[in-house]
Length: 402
Image (cartoon, rainbow, N blue to C red; front, top):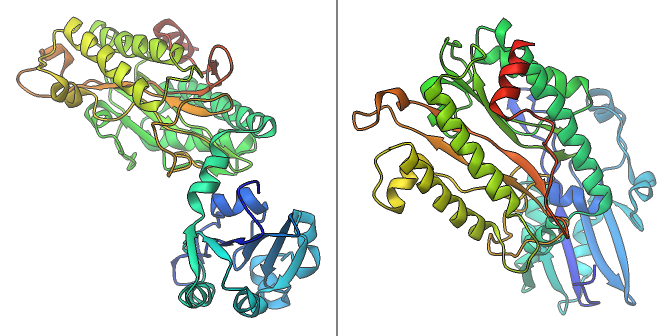
């Protein structure tokens, strides 16, 4: 609220309730900026933040309780109980247009264009088109979200701990599984049993050559002896995501070639993680530049054909990491140039994806490996929240054999 003056008003609608097909809904997930500001999980609502006489004032427009809606979709909060979410005032959604039209034209409107109910969107758009001064609210909220409070850090710790246990259970169960889908099912089962609301994103569960497809989410192949598994997955707990990647052998034992590539990726991970510092200079872009230098050195040691930065991208096409929080790729408007500060969460996820092509040494063809940790920026050394998920070769082989 510090950025607001008495002349400013923030208007943000809730995410719409969506359907897979006729009468079959998706599970509802609230827009995370709306949720961050309100804590309110219901659709068909609008939050308004303003200042009155210099003091913050929070209004929440909601649908009144309705027996028919509650019969089909469950209990509603209603106007009477929005105070439980910290709102200073609750009003029926039907009064939104009257409230908006009564705002003086001298007010600057900060609005987030969220995919919401058609009638809400129509009302707000009609109001905004009436000669109002409008700014995008999203960047302001995103910058509030990028640095976590102590309470948020604790929720992140729990989210990651759930996923860490689930990952270890998947590794232990690999020897009993025949398909990628079974590994995915084990991951989701343990995340949900330990309290996660859902998986934070569609997981990547691949083996063999499909490890080299960044967003492979079909997860429908047979596990083949001699292949490496690549799993990129995480649970969402209390609306905070975890995001972990590990790579390990289907049969529980790395070949020498797989081990060589794996240890090169692991070395990049260790060095880049150590560089996650709030030193006034480091940001995600400088981390990525550093990782690219390290990967280039690794490619030379592996005797893979390279000729400059474009060749490095042949084997390492993504960046070293991203912000992490309520969304997996968190706070999308925050620049990677922003200097790291204590309380920020970043992923560190180097990878090597070696194509199955004639100019590649035969023993390395088709090997794809990524290792990803969730890291908290502190005033001192970085804290690795995913440290309990095995990633050393000996530890991976041991847990797969257990």
